[in-house]
Image (cartoon, rainbow, N blue to C red):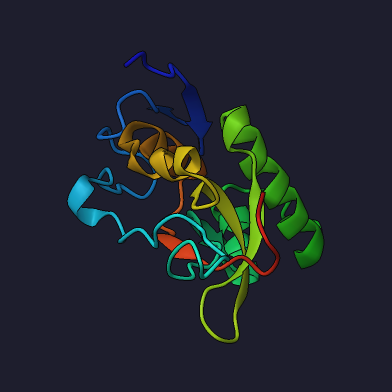
Amino acid sequence: MASLGLLIYSSSRRTDSTNPSRPHQFGLPPITADMMPASPGVWNHNPQVGPIIKSHVLGFAFSTKDQEQWAEDHQIEPQYSTSQRRMLAQKAMYQRLPPKFRHMSLVYRDPVTMASCIVVASNRMVEDLKKAENLETINVVRCALDFPSPLQWYRPERPFG
């Protein structure tokens, strides 16, 4: 498989995203197959076809507190208000991502905490679900985000797609 060849600059440290095992700001190890969350299966809303499987997205979720911390860690306009810094942090995260991964969904990280989720795959179609198996691109996104947010399957607040 061809390498994506992205170079990511973070906190004045260069990180080569083609080699996710290289340390970056948080020193996170690359995600491996045994660390992957279990797939929910392909989305199905018709009980005549098979069991009902709700829509899910696989991604890295960032609560407002996480976004504030990301802005702090990456020195995003410290003189601005907290809400402005969160907005600028989200924009900066997007700019660090490869264009095909600039998708976001609102999710609940727990029953009360809403979060913005950078989506790397979904279960809407078999092709989308296969993206969840591509560890190279998942690690590129993780390295680009440069934050220890866990990779998980989430139910989107609204249908994703």
